[in-house]
Image 1: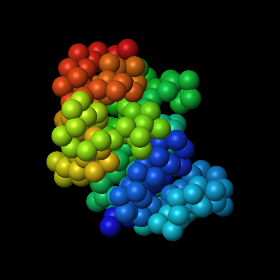
Image 2: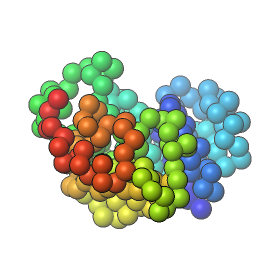
Image 3: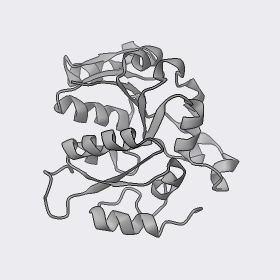
Length: 213
């Protein structure tokens, strides 16, 4: 059993919580408004979930999931995530986050920004190019024809291995995109973004992605 510290309890964060609890794992989940505001979600998730502050979720995490708006990245605790695998679900929405010149120019990626903020963590892109609802509905057993595939990206092979195994347990094939600097291929407005695709289709969509959009 793994304890996930989920920082961000929005659509993606709550769906990842549901998915890993269904696998038998535990969740410590935080949002920006305080643990008391998560009572309804915790009641739904059941005894394998508890609400906490972001600091507490980071400390409790064996595996962390960061799923906060990009503009709030600096609020993610640093020290308690050192040495840990950190799943990054983020996308850049300038309408929400404001313009970030380095992203607009293709000089960095959202996951590299998180890796820079968490220099001693093992950041890995995950769950960023799937609609939240699909996380718990689109999974199928391994070997299913046209099984949906998701991408992951990291500079750390152990993080890629972890996400690949997690995807498979939830019901998805994996395409790895390395190093982390290549994670732009699965960001917003690229061909692979929120599209239902099998492994071969995902590989093709990643290959034809434009660097800037």
